[in-house]
Length: 282
Image 1 (tube, rainbow, N blue to C red):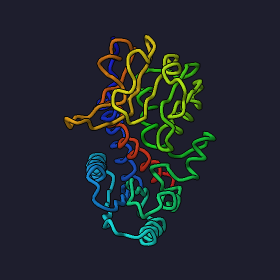
Image 2 (tube, rainbow, N blue to C red):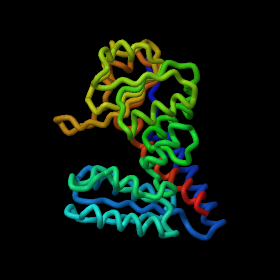
Image 3 (tube, rainbow, N blue to C red):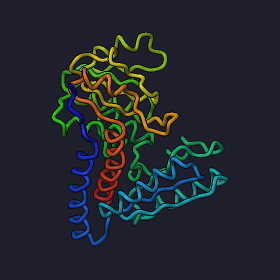
Image 4 (tube, rainbow, N blue to C red):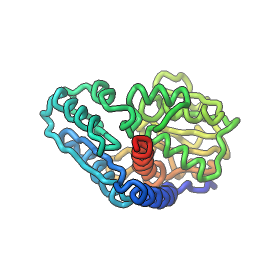
């Protein structure tokens, strides 16, 4: 039977540490780190995420500003807002809430953010630095997964690590971070011929595919560490992960629940990135 890796508890621990760090920062420099979030349109999930980010900033003492733009905002207008924030020394972190409306090119927007203020770590400069291991910021979800492993006493070195999913936001940087800690990494994706063959070899399995209950108990090995990044809303309105939690719980050595596992860590790592940005800029 697995031990549960409690993302809520670990997140609370890190936020308490950050609150102290920010308090010291304010005392030494006379101002608080600041984060500006831009949201375009009325996507309900995005609205919830942005509200949660605002609350988290207040909790630890980060100055938070939200710029809300209408759905019909053009790409040029959005880029000019980013350009203004890039040049504003009182803004330490800039985050554009994704997804953007279809008429705006996400790549152009992500790459317009000054890499020193790119607290999501999505820009091509920061993505390249993550691959080489010479980074200031990490994408928040993979960074959160690594914190969960570290603070749960789970070593990566020498382990067989399997990442299911190859998105730029989670899968690819996740694989890089596991490699940086000397894991032997396999990445599975939609064209992988036999996903269970690979997942059954995993000492550490990270699933980020966005399919409820995709990882079944017969797809994991006895004593594996199972990290579930998936957050899927199913027909009854409940949240489910990518992993069949009840089934895999009996077999795994450690497992993250959904909700309450990786989810709380994502915003916490955004706060951490904002503090890092403020320190580097000042």
